[in-house]
Amino acid sequence: MNTNLSVEERNNYQNTDIIRKLLNTSRTIAIVGLSDKKERASNFVGSYLLSEGYTVIPVNPLKQEILGQKCYPDLKSIPCPVDIVDIFRRPDECVNIVKEAIEIKAKAVWMQLGIVNREAAQLALNNGLQVVMDRCIKMEHGRFSGNLHWAGMNTEIITAKKARFI
Amino acid sequence: MSEKRKFGFETRMLHAGHIPDSHTGARAVPIYQTASYVFDSADHAASLFELKQYGNIYSRISNPTNAVFEERMASLEGGTGAVAVSSGQSAQMLTMMTLLNPGDEIVASSHLYGGTYTQFEHTFKKLSLKVTFVDPSDIENWEQAITPKTKVLYGETIGNPAGSIFDFESVSALAKANNIPLVIDNTLASPYLCRPMEWGADIVLHSATKFINGQGTAIAGVVVESGKFDYTNFPAVSAPSIPYHNLNFYETFGHYGFLMKLRAETLRDVGACLSAFDSFLLIQGLQTLSIRMDRHVQNALAVAKFLKEHKMVDWVNFAGLPDHPYHERAKKYLPKGVSSVFSFGIKSKSTNARETGKKFIEALQIFSHVANLGDSKSLVIHPASTTHQQLSDEELVRAKVKPELIRISVGLETTEDLLWDLEQAFHAISQ
Image 1 (cartoon, rainbow over the protein chains, first blue to last red):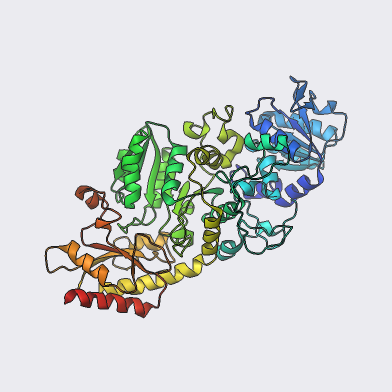
Image 2: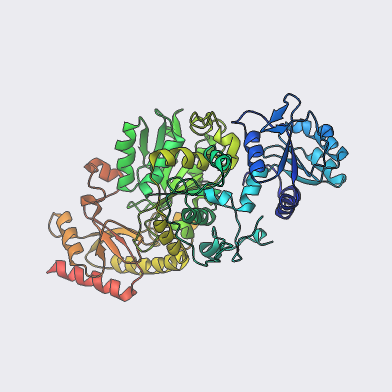
């Protein structure tokens, strides 16, 4: 798969054990930079996560509601606990978003495919958050849930055991 | 965790893409012989149609048995995913219709299967696609043929029936330098003998009818993509899709973008889908691919050596033989062997080489005279009068098809029986 990270960084930030556990144990995902435009990648990810049963909280200062969910201007305004902060913003905005994620005691930050900020990743790790970087949360969920398999994609899962969720 | 181990080729041949389902635990891959799939809800249906959720809608677009075949092929070729289609010809057609807009150009090796040549030269012309065929032996020919409109470089791992071996390193470097995807037909090699993506190919196609099926029981094709090509500035893939409300497949699906577009647009609209039953046959074939290929290679070498030493044989064109001009390249790209499809020419007393070839084929008892290759049974054909008969004399020369050329696909029979069959046919035509 495509990534700009080194082997060691992939081990830290794209670790499949961490990804599976995160997707399995998280319920609430705040998406920073979720667009209300139907054709945008973030909108696809948001609607996918909703249809897979996650609580999705849009973070976008310009909107009241996206995908039928109440929108918040920033992470600090969200009134409930957040498991994963999923970031669809430019890499140079990631450090500030991570600082907020630490403040609201999120369990993890997830920087989407193509978004790499090593300083932000290290800051999150230092504060006890789990980190995924340069990966798409929809693709990873699709891979481990078997959904992407229906589209003929290579999930790289090899097993003789019966199917199980994520 | 199991996904961390890099499982070997043979393990993936048997397991990739299939997780036994939690309800029945069926060990074999079930044949999902169904046209359509019940939706969970109206919202679920809508999200499937908008591509916001992955899942099955209608078997023209995807099918659970096909998905096993597709993921298995992607795993074996080292790709990001695959789309199964109704034939090798449709694999080419769907790939090009996804990659190209009218007016775009393909630069292709002239050492191609006759059916591919005809599709490119004549049918693609009707779609306003221009194909420039080049003698693949010199990289300069490729360089000179590339224009600003060139959107695909195309070749076959082992040219059929030219017998040449594709110059992966030079052509893939040229493709990268020009930001053009390199598309390779890997039918004759199969992913067991050569994996073009490891040498820089972006898209790999197969006529899965051949070695993948291995029994001559299904017509099928497959498109596999590496996921490594950057389509950002490649309008055919990354331009907003009007039917999908301006969705940019590359931005939204990333390294799955090309295949998602090929499936959700081109396959949906062209309709060249594969049946679940045929996928099942291909899956059965894949499970023994490595064992069959080793045996094909072994028998082919024995037959090639026998022919090479035969007094009635003028020439043998098989890169598996040490004195072949492409032998060194073959050792590099196909270290386990050069498959089992090659050609030879019989010495002809009369001037009519075509007639001698015809008589020889008719005298064979074990080799089947058919228009196919890659079957477990040995096959034989005279391309100039069959697979390549639509080519002009000049085109035949460029495709390296001489009038006396006989192409064989050596099967898995007892080696001595194949040599016996050839010998008795030589005897029959010498009478």
